[in-house]
Every structure is written in structure tokens, then in C-alpha cells.
Image (cartoon, rainbow, N blue to C red; front, side):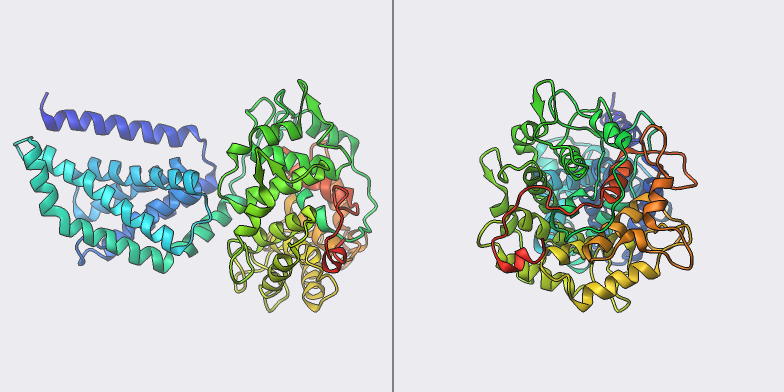
Length: 524
């Protein structure tokens, strides 16, 4: 077999493996649409900058896709972008190499997130994209050596590499410049998608435990709640049954436990009155799992906040695996007071610091609260990425709870944000993310925000509508599961957990926390 034929076989296997990986991830229609859009954008970026040899944003888009969304989407965007752009540049034996090269850097973006965390700044992301350009260049140099050299010696490979060096350097420098210009903004947008819209729907009675992308965490710092609806007992049992024998929770019953799902499950159950410290299966409690798998907690600030909240909900110190999670979280605060420059991440961090109640955190809480208050839009609402984006019920609800935790409940910012929520209630009593049909998730966020603002959600009616509490109760099924919406029969358990927390409407913290300062005490 010739060098070219052998290389095509290997490349074909690599591409088949990559696309099989993506297919086995069972991407939703929304993910498919996003991947297609990103691939088209990457291809267009290559075509638009064709007059500048090797200077193009394609590699940046591919790397950042993998960084924000994961390896399989990153690989798919890179491979499809290469194939699509060659409809303009021309197909040839180089196309499979380009598909594999860009697919690899997309998967490399996911590896970067796993190793370094998803909180890298502009400079670090730009440097990573520069390195990705050099890696892609090395793949293409290998393709030239295999396909066109005729003399497959190391000396010839060295000559090809040396000849291509100016082009590879131009590619790397272009990547750095493009990423510095738009990288953080793209990552924020993709992370918003990842957190908001990439939902796995499962049949009623079979789904569980992702349980719990819950709003329970948000209740750590709420003032006295006025909602008086009881938690449906069937819904609580529905969540309890999802626990694994190692004490943790997976995305659904029987799935392997993760820190992500275990942390949210702990908070959701605690909000409903079930202690994470005593809930155990196979002799292992929720706290046992969190502490025993502390090594899984990586660079994401949201992970630290969630774990602090879960441990404090269980009434134990915010330490795991010998790590001081509060100190780690505080170290991630930016000079402007924010955490990761994001509204929701900052709100969660404020609540985690509030829950820890550790002396010395007052200044960090105040700075974060001031930054959070400054992100309110002119209409009073909040956007996930900060001031200027379209206001949404989910983001406004989380911001209200962060502001309450920072001791800013009695401020004009909070009053205007609560007013924004009331104005955007739908006729059925529920709320949507940014307009459209109501859903349980957005309604739960809105309820928690209203409670944080000192408003009684059981009295919120707009133009004769039902209350948001009544809307949530209308979605509860006989099994205890909660439907996502009135028009959807699907009942993913994380929706059940969110609705359960809102229906609890209790005055938390979830654990006996002693405030370290008057500012913190005022948020109780």
C-alpha cells in the first residue's frame, strides 16, 4: 500500500471515529443547529480572509467551540468547516487532512477546558489559539510530506516544516489577534447556550437527577419568604430515588455520579427539607460523595460555589479533599468585583461566600454586590453576560438573589428588577426566558427572585392571570415529576427539582449560618 493510500485509510478512520463520537453524544436539535452555524461561520471566516495567507479566524472558532461546548461539537465544527470551505477553495487530497487537523484542535479546546478550567482570561485563550495554529500547521506539514514529497525521509519532513514556518507563524499570530478581539465574547455566548439550552429530555419516571440544575442554591441567602405552598411529597420522593449507591447522583437514575449533579441534588433536597448529610444509600451519604471526589472539582468558579453551597446546606464546613473551597473561590474574584465577568456566576459566588459566613469575606461580597447592581439594564432586568444584553426572567431572578445575599435587597435596583419580572408575567401565570410560552424553569427562577426581593409570588397576578405558584402546581404529574411546560409531556428531573425549590418558598439559609458582618446579616 502506498503512503497516500495508507494515510487516507488512517484519516478516514479518524474522521469516522470523530463523527461517531459526536453522534453517540445524541446532540439535540438546538446543538445540531448551533454546530452547523459555527461550522458555517468558521468556513466563512476562512473564505473572507483568503487574501491574507494563513491569517483567518477559523482555528479560533473551532478551538473556542471545543473549549465551551466540549470535544465532540468542537471536532464536528472543525471537520465540517474544512469540508465546507473547500467548496470555495477546491477539494483534493488535502481536504481529509484539514478536516482531521481542525477536528483535533476542536477536541484540544475541550482538553484545555478540562485541564485549565473554563475561566481563562483573554490572554490565556489567545495564547492557546496561537498554539492551536502551530499544531494545525504541523498536521498540514505532515500532509505535504506524505502526499507530495515522494521522498519520505526525516530530512525532507524537516525541509517542508522549515519552508512552511513563515506561514505557520503568520497563522499563529493571526489566531492570537483574532482571539484577543472576539474570543471572550464568543466563549460567553457559547457558555450561555451550554448552561441554558442544551437540555436532555427523558421520559417521565425514567429521567432523574441531572436533577437538579436547581434553584436551591439560590435560597442560601434569601430573606424571609412569603410563599406558603408546601412541597409535593411525591416530587421529593422522585428526587430521593435518584441517589446512587456511592452516595452521589448522576444525570438520571443508574447513571454514574458526578460532582455537578450531586451538588445540585444536595441543594434541591435540602430546600425541600431533606438533609444531604443523612440521605444515604449503600452506606454512603451525599456529603461522603462530595468529599471523596473533590479531585473532580476543577477550575470553574461555578463548581466551587455550588460545592460550598451544598456542603453548607448539609451543615458541614466548606472543605473537601483537603481543599479550602472558600479561599479558592475568593482567589477567583476579579479586580472589578465580578466572578468570571458573568451575572449568574457572580450571584452564585456571593451566595456561596454568604453561606460560608467566614470572617474576611465581607469586602469580597460588597465588591461583587456593587458590580452586580451595575449590570442592571435600563428596563430593570438582567442578562447573563451583563449590561446591554436582552433581559431575561432566569437572569433577573438569579441577580435578585445575589443582590439580596450582598445586603442590597432594599435598593432601587432590586425594586426595578422585581418590577421587570412582574411586568413580564404571562397570562397563564408563568414566565419565559425572554418572551414566548411559559416554562417551569423560567418560572422557578422568577419565583425565587421575587422572594429575594421581598415580594410574595403567591400574590403576583397580572391582568387576572394565575399566580406563578399556581402555574408550577399545574405542571405536577401524579408521579411527582414536573412537566417542562403545559404543551410538553416531557418531565426531566432537573425541572422537577427547580419547581420543587420554588414551591418550597422557605426562608433559608439551608444550613445554620452565622453572619460575619452586619452587611451579611442584613441579607438573611
